Amino acid sequence: MSEPICIGVLGLGNVGAGVLEVLDRNADVLTQRTGKRLVVKTVLVHDLHKKRSVSLGSATLTVNAEDILNDPDIRIVVEVMGGEQPAYDYICAALRAGKYVVTANKEVVSKHKKTFFELARKHHTDIYFEASVGGGIPIIRSLKVGYAANQVKAFYGILNGTTNYILTQISEKNQSFEVALKTAQELGFAEADPTMDVSGLDTAYKLSILAAVALKSEVQVSDISYEGIEKVTLHDIRHAREMGYAIKLLAIGQQTGRGGISLRVHPTMIPLSHPLAHVRNELNALFMVGDMVGEAMLLGRGAGSLPTGSAVVSDIVDIVFDMAYEEPKRTQRNLEPHYEGAVLVDAGTVASQFYIRLWVADAPGTLAKLAAILGEWDISISKMMQQSVKNEVAELIIVTHSVLEKKMRQALSQIETLPEVKDIASLLHVGLDEGGL
Ligand SMILES: NC(=O)c1ccc[n+]([C@@H]2O[C@H](COP(=O)([O-])OP(=O)(O)OC[C@H]3O[C@@H](n4cnc5c(N)ncnc54)[C@H](OP(=O)(O)O)[C@@H]3O)[C@@H](O)[C@H]2O)c1
Image (cartoon, rainbow, N blue to C red; front, top):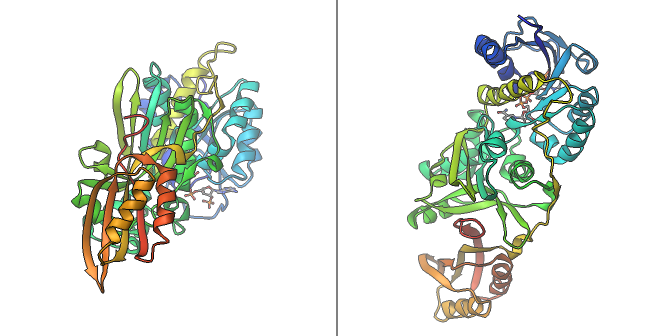
């Protein structure tokens, strides 16, 4: 048997432990596939004395990153610490040393992918990040390799297990947001501080990575319009279901046909006839439209120790195949060779149907005034329903036909000033109609 491939792992939390377990449990299969023994030599942690649930085998624990970054035997560095720093510094140091890098860290990849691609190219190495989007689902590899013959016209992703779990529980068990969040935390699907998930930021990081992979565009999260699920209520989810929709937090990427791309994250009412409407609990999915393949969907576990470990180890396998070639025959195939700044279309100029839930005075003339303002902005109504009346205030639901978002918002700011309007409780996008489907 030839020399083993030595791996250094930065971090031994959920994902780090999963990586070690996958390498250990499937050692024979991995050796058969790669022709090499894959050996974890050193693992970086914060706390040497913490009890670990995973067997370390022959690996040594360290609190000194230099033990990995300066070790010439270690050819692959796996970063599974999380956060921007010191992960960024360690990844740069590993690439500068000519080591291959695998990371599961969406934040650092989203913010620094351009620097990583440039450094990797300069030092004749590569960086892989399959686990950073969709956990165990091979979304990145599918977009890069499986659908390589296509131009991706559009994709729609449920990429955050925490928010999908919460929305599913609210819908199926009639729970409030707070109760569903607490259950998600108890089951380990949500962090103690769930802000990054619930606000849509986590999904926006993943969207910017998919923009690089599927649309070959460099985009930062600060350029993406994102909205979370904080304002989605049990009320809206029930009304949506009665009308034949499920509410999901979607990451949306579309070629607009105007030479630009549109990237957005927001809760969306999806028709129950669409497969994305049936992605339940902590599962993730990506629905894509390629110009040749048509519609396709990937579904699976978007998080968890072993699913995420599986994605990291599949990257390691890919790297070992690449290592079989000596320079200059190595492919550096994971880098984006034609990767450019994107022309991003303003979210306000994208058309969609909208669902509006508002509380209005239950008095003659109210509906006529609302309809008049919508008419002024060329917004036509697809459905209007009065739900309930309490103390002479009625709950009204309006679903519009397709309209530019900025027009919708302008009309609503005018509607808000009507004395008959007590509260505009919700505004949600309806359907996946524009730009791709
Ligand atoms: N959890 C998932 O299901 C999942 C799925 C997809 C992607 N990811 C991504 O994978 C990464 C890791 O997530 P995780 O859930 O495994 O995190 P985690 O459980 O918090 O583990 C982090 C690990 O990194 C170590 N660490 C952190 N900062 C360190 C530092 N400055 N120096 C030395 N060691 C340090 C910690 O050491 P100690 O153990 O000594 O404290 C711990 O072992 C994140 O980027 C996350 O977004 C996670």
